[in-house]
Amino acid sequence: VRLYYSVARAVRFSQPAPTPMEATAGIATTPEAMGVEENGWVLEGPSELMPKEEVVAMGPAMPASMPALRVEAALERPSTTAEAHELAAVLSVVAPAVDSTARAPLRLVAVLDKSGSMRGDKLRLVQQTMRFMLRHLGEQDQLGLVEYAGKAKVLAPLTVCDADGCAKLDAALTRIRPDRGTNLSGGLLQGLALHRKGASDAADPDTSMQQVQFGDTSRRLSEEDAAATWLALTPPSVEAPVNPADLEEAVVRSTFLFTDGLATEGIREKGDLCTAVRRALEELGDRRCTVSTFGFGTDHSASVLQGLAEIGGGIYSYVESEDQIGQAFGEALGGLLSTTHQNVQLSLKLTLGVTLARVCTDFAYECSEESGVQTVLVEAADLFAEERRDILVVLKLPWASGADTDQVLGQLSTRAFSVVMSRFETAGPVDLIVRRQATVHALESNPHVERHRSRYLTTEALSAANQVARQGQLAEARRILSEAASKLSASDLGAHGDSVILGLIASLTDCQNDLRDQHQYRSVGDKKMTCMTMAHTQQRAMNLEATDIYGTTITRSMKSYFQSSVTR
Image 1 (cartoon, rainbow, N blue to C red):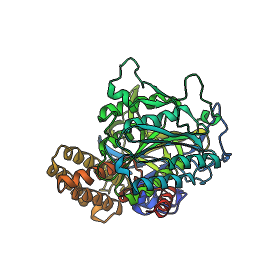
Image 2: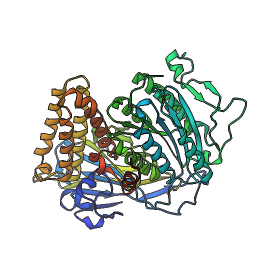
Image 3: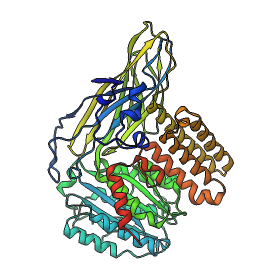
């Protein structure tokens, strides 16, 4: 383990220095952006690959080695008093930049809304975007297609994207015609079921239909639930062929749900729909996929799409206009194609006497204690190449008996499954060390820690404001956002024009402007605030300009490429 303080050049990064806004949000954080040269401890731990008992060969040959996962820690201050008090820290895991040819196979199902409101340019642009997607998929990838209006139908099961498969998928896209009704639940549940079935050579429009139950089969389905859970299945007398590629562990699985309106058929209540989707995902077992949702225009429910994305571990992307359809899909596809690690975990084991005051994140975490020693484990989901996750924590420090001594507060490590190397990888441990002194002169907080404290304040304000706005309290929502913006402006970084803080203030101000009346809020504000909240929480780009700071080289490139190529 190496400990760096006041030696900015010693910290190695694989990418060119980003802007300060990018430093907190997206690519690789430079020492300068973190304030290392002035007042921050930056600790970087070793990384190693853990041997896997069984590694199944997959698609193209994987590289013998690749840049490693990194773990970093930054303390609020490098030195502090000997008295008992609280100290903030940021725990970080950073994905490496990788060669674009070194990636895991993709299993993607697209669930497409073809309701009457999609008629015209919207549906044509979706079809054009899907065809453009096919250009970026290869023989190691599989794509499935589901359409839905009043009823849902499988256009193509997961199909190998070789020349023949792409031709069949293209033909399936041509068959999409707008129709009445919106059975969102039926479409999504059928899409999820395709992951369980695996690959097939072609879509069969005459596939027989069976009614199935998800999860707790002791519960009798209501008529409404039953209407939404008719799934296209291989006839029970014929066992679906198993593609050897489907046995691989190191694949990226995802479902994209596209819609421009509210459900009119099938399961329409948010709670019931989320329950059905959660059970469907559990039924997939080791073929569980992520679920990302894309809401077009003004009429969809941001709350429903956000809920589905949270359950599915994906994103909710707000597509404000038809012109953004291509770029939204391209950005999301770029992320999937550059996934480097799954099931990322950050573990902080505290020193005896040091305790955890708060964990400031929406990622799932659990705290445990053994013999007085506390450990916090954060589930940080998956990582795209160059992405990072920065978790703000607040520690309670005990009184220090000795003056002018270094105190180890804890050890930070990370563990994740590398889909590129098909192995589990660890990084760390890193010691969190602070200097305890009898007298400490006033020190500015580490800018890196302050930026993430501000990011957390912003997400909390956006979430709280949106919650009261949905209850019709627009004035209270404006007050919450205004108060948060004032706090950011009054901070040291805000007063000095820090670009990260200014960007967060701009997000709050933009959302505040969409709270001027109920029509603007329901049409735009609710969707924008929902998307921004999720993006700032996950540190992931989600189509809106304000979330571009979390983009990576590949997601930005794909977004721009699709934007220029998918046109009216």
